[in-house]
Length: 386
Image (cartoon, rainbow, N blue to C red; front, side, top):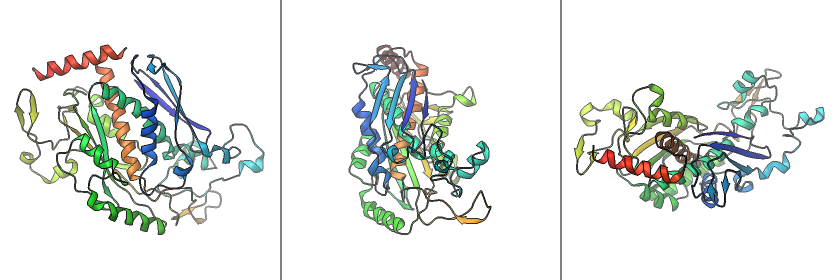
C-alpha cells in the first residue's frame, strides 16, 4: 500500500491516490465523510471550518461499493476556492494580480521563511499554501479507508486529548477503545474526563480573546492488534519507529512517546518492563511500553501520544522581518484557530490507522479481502498456540 496527497490550502481541490488496497473491500463513502467531519470539529476552530464542509468524491478504484484492487483516487473540493481563483490561478495572470495577497512577512514557527529559502520563492504564499494543515484532510480520508481495513480484521482504534493548554485530563491506565469513543463523542474538546471540559473551553475562549494559541497532547489507542507486526532485524522495519515518524509528520507535532514514554527515564527497570504471563495465550501484567517490544507489537493495546505545539499563526502576531526590505515587521496573519488539538487527535488516529493497515497488508496476502482476512485469522491462531 502506498499513497500520495496533492493540493494547496486555497486551491480548487485536494487529491489523494492510494494503491494497494485489496479488491473486495466494502468501502463506505459515508464513513469517510464522517471522519472528515470529525477533523473539522472541536471547540476553538476558526472560520475556515464554517466554510469547508468536506465531502469526498471517489473517481477511480471503486465500483458498486467495492474496491477493485486498482488505484483509488479521492478528491475533496475547497469551497473557498471561489474567493481565490485569481490569487491561486494555475494559468498566468497580469503582473498586478500576481501581487494579490502576496506574503513577504514570514510567520515565526511556520515553514514560510525556510521554505522560501529552499525553493527560491519571493512570495511566501507559495510555501504556506502547501505547508498548511489543510493537507491533513486527505490523510484523514486515507486513514478512513485504512480504518475500514482494520475493522474487517477486528482491530479498533480511537483517539482523545490528554492535555490542552496545560489542563490535563484524568485518563485511566486501562481504558478500551470503545470507552474512549463513547466519552469523546460526548465531548466538544475530545477528552475522556468530563470534569475538565468547562475549564478547557474557558481557556480556549480566553486564548482567542487574547489573539493567542494553545497546544496540547493527544493519545491514540488501538485494540486487538496481533503480536509480531514490525521487525527487529533492521532499523527501518521497526513498527513503533514508523508510527513515530508519521506522528511527527502531522503539522505542529514536536514529540512522540509510547506507553509511559519519557516517564520511563525516571523509573527503575523493575517498574518499567511488562511481566509476561500465560492464560490461554501470552499477555503482560502491565502495558508501560505501549504495546511494543523490539520494534514489534506484543499483542497488548498500542498506546502512542503526540505533543502539538500552539498554532504559529497569531491574531496578535509576533515580530518578523520583511524579506524585501529586511526591516522588522509584525508577521503576516492568515485565518487560523485558537487551538486545533482536538482536530489533531483525529488526524493522529487516522495516520496511525494508515501505518497499521500498511503493515498488515505488507505482511499478509492481500490481493483480495477474503484471502487477507483468512491469513490474519490463521496467523492469530498460530500466535495464540506458540
